[in-house]
Image (cartoon, one colour):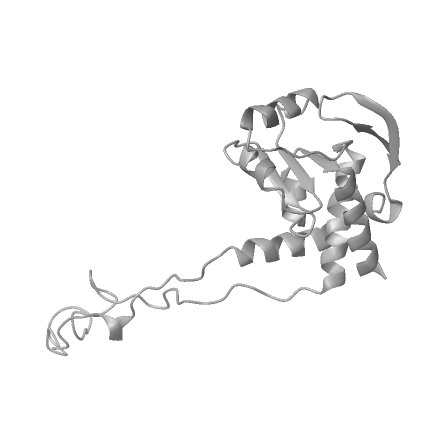
Length: 212
C-alpha cells in the first residue's frame, strides 16, 4: 500500500512511501488487541485502594448486648460490619493489577491496530520537521493544513521532540508520541495517525525485528 508524503503546509510533495504489508496490511487480531489494551489499562491502575476490616476499626471491643433474649440477632462490638461505622467485609486491599503479556502478542496487537488505521485510510505521512521553540499556534496550523484539526490526532516522531510536544500539550484533541512509546491503546484511541518519514522507518525496523 502506497501513501503520499505531505509537507507541514499540507502540500503533496509528489513522493510516495510504501507501507510494509507485514505491519500495515495484516488481518487484524482482535483478541491480541484486547489483551494488549487490557494490560495497558491495568498498568495505569495504582492499586492503592483500601478499606478497614473489623479488626482495624478504632473502637471499643465491648460486647454491646447480651447473647440471648434481646429480641434480635446476636452481635458483638461496635466494630461489627452490620453496624454503621463498623468494618467492611471483604473490602478492597492494595494489589498490583499488572500482568505478563508475551512480546509476540504485543507486537501482533500493534500491527493489528496499525492495519486497522491503514484500512480506514487514517494514516498520513509527513516530511520530518521540528520547531525552534514551542509554538501551539504553529502546531494547530499544521493540523489545519493536513485537514485533521477536527479529528483526534496522534503525531508520531522517531525520538523525543520537546518543542513539538510542548506545542501540542495544551490541545485536548492532539497527542505527540515517540515510536518507542507507541502502544496499541494510543493508536486505536486516535482518529488519525500522522507519522513523520523517519518515524515510519523506525516503526518498521522495530516491529520487523520483533517478528524475526
